[in-house]
Length: 285
Image 1 (cartoon, rainbow, N blue to C red):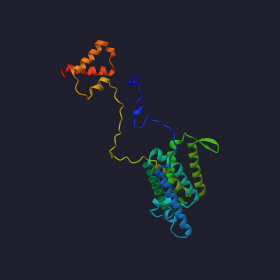
Image 2: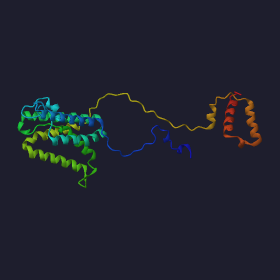
Image 3: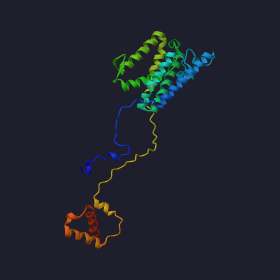
Image 4: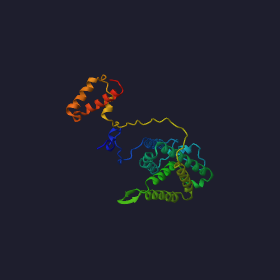
């Protein structure tokens, strides 16, 4: 086998590329958000059982005159079991997948933009049309809708098992969204309009691409390990640091050829003979 047919992947630092399926890891940003939301729910429940006036009511966006800071605090204001469970489920199942594919920056940006946009819209509706906000906004609906949309785009063609029946992930997410809308309308009627508008605007803001900054950061160039260059043996011998050959050494090699033929020379002898010949031509010996 010639050198051009040899596999040199063994000379690479990381070896040959191998692609294998691996489970989605719980990335740090998604896990941090999950811990923060659980901690907020525990604190609010403790305050509620303690009978203090401070708690969820001051953090949620509620008509008719919500405070401006509730635009930022409403994602952590829920003490309702179903809403807390839904938020934790999204943060545990969907958020890690979003961070795995799009990165930590995209995850946090969609969380912030989605919640702020949804909170600002709901806050405005609560002040202008209180009848359209039948229930307070006290959980991160903007980020949740944004992540559901992103996850639908990623995995809508994948299959999942629901009650022993294979279904497309896209259909399951669409069904969940439809059920949420129907429940909101059934509970609040026209009071769900504010929630629907906030969910749509927050979800649209959350799926925006990350801001593109024209900042070029220095990048470390990867170290490339080249395979050893194939060379002829006489080239390696030309780097020999032995003392300069004498004519006696050359005469010995020529005598060996004269006596036993060229075939009697070893590869090392032939390489050395070539070096001596070149030196002879340059009048170095």
